[in-house]
Every structure is written in C-alpha cells, then in structure tokens.
Length: 366
Image 1: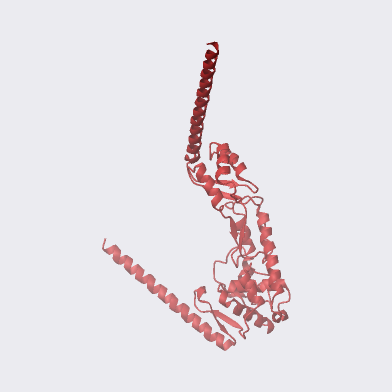
Image 2: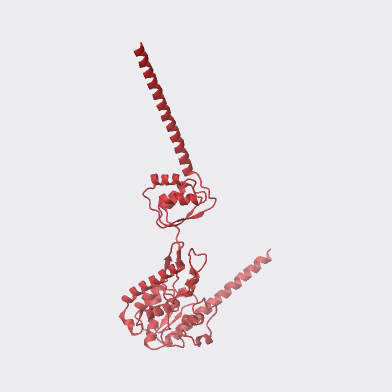
C-alpha cells in the first residue's frame, strides 16, 4: 500500500509539474504575442512629427546607428525596436548618406522604407554658361544654400566650369568652389589636348582658348552656331581686325558684377577699358565669363568659314544670327535685322493697343 501511495504521489507531482510547465508556456506565448502585437503596432504607428522634417544621414552611418539618431530627434519612440525591425526586414539594404525629407507623422515602417529605397535630396549649385565668377560667388554665399564656412571671394574669371556641381549638406563654400575649379582644370586640359592645330596661329595657350570661348558663350546661346561664331573671331584675329564684341565692352564697364541694365552708348564703345574690343586689338586680357564645354569645344574645333561678321536675325536671341564674309553682305544683314526688329516692335505696339481697347470695352459694359 505504501508503495502504491508513493507512485500516486509521484504521478500527481508529475501532473502538477506538467500543468505548471504548460501554464508557463501558454503565458509565454501570450506575453510573446502581446509583445509582438505591441512591437508591430508601434512599428506602424504614425510618428509624432506633425510636419515634414529633414533628417540627415551622416556619411558612414548604418541602419544600426540611425535608430538612436531618429529617437534623439523625436522621429521615433524606440530605437531598439527600429533597429530590430531593420535587421529583420532590411538587413542588406544600403543607406545613402544625405538629407531625407520625412513626411509628417511618418511611422517607423515609413521611415525605414524611405531611407532604404529612395535617394536623399539633391543639393547642387548650377554654374550657368556665361555666368561671371562674381555671380557664382554670390550664389555660393547665399544663406539659403545648405553650405557652411565663411563667404568666398570671386575667383579668377573663367576658372569655373559651367556645369552642375553637387555637394553634401554642410560642405563648406570653399570646398565647393575648389571642386568647381578642379573640374575646369581637368576639362580644359582635355579640350586643349585635342584642339585643332589650325587655331594655334592666334590661340596659343589654354588661357587664350578660355578667353575666346567666353566671348563665344556670351554672343550666342545656340549650340549649333557656336563653331561659326568662333570662326568669325578667329578669322578677324588672323586679319588683325578688332573683335568689336559688345559683351566684352559691357564686362569692361561692370567687371562682371551684375548686368548692365541699359543699352550700350557711343561713349561706351569708345571707353578706355582693357576689355573694350572696339578699342583694343586682339583678345581681351582674360575671359569675361565662365564658359561651358560646348563653347570651349567650339573654339578648339571651329567651323571652317570665311565669315568676318555676324548680326542677330531678330530681337529674339533664340533666332540666332546672320553671318557674312564681306562688309557689303553684312550691311544687307543689318538691314534685314532692323526690318525684323521694326516689324516686331510694330506688332508689339499693335497687340498692346488691341489689349488696351479690349480692356476699355470690357470696362464700359460693367
């Protein structure tokens, strides 16, 4: 009997132990489920920011370190949860450094998706072909730019390549300027290495090429006629003719600091500045702007022409120019230009009158 009671007590203890284990397992499942539910709900819960806000991913940052930064800046409530979700769902994702604009109330899920599947915001400064170094420096020094450091002074004219220059938010103004000049140095070396040897009778250095390219850049915005404009200047230089280009005269008056907000006068064309190509022979002492690659190529590989003159077709620069090899031809082209301008002015005046009459007729009916 005693042995039977012992066996019963052992079975009873085993049942109690098994029940206890089952209870613990069930409780564990409930707790795990509750924890999972809480984690999932927090992961997809709308974030606290009530407006779109910029978030910076520093160079060298990974998903593991971003959670802490997001929590510190108030984008998320739990860095560990964000890190765990990133390990589970986006372990192999590459995060590009840069600034991301996170939407208002972005959840952890939204943020993780955005920084692992999209590119950061782009920051760049455009050097427009024909801009002066003073204008570029003004742009770099604009407080609205996401740049740091002291203001830069305008570099030498023609030392900046006229293209888009990307930068990382927080870069210094000077570093961006240095990159611009480095690009121009490399581009000019490439152009000069492949230039047409036929230009060397009048263009003997890379610096002279840039100076002439800046004149071409300011005279026309049409890529198709840049080689022809370059040929005019080269042909005039060969014949010892003055270049007589208005943009150079304007530069001599402003030194590139803004635009001359008026038409050139007879006095301007006689002004004694180093850049007045109506007075000085040959090229001006340096570039009058920062040219783009197309203008550099146009001088390095000009059209083969006998042209010595050109004049605009109409008052619209997009219409291009009329070219001539003789002065008699050029005078005819000038006449055509003046007629086109007169017709355009007459049409403008007619349109203005019609608009005024229509406006008056409308007023009389009220």
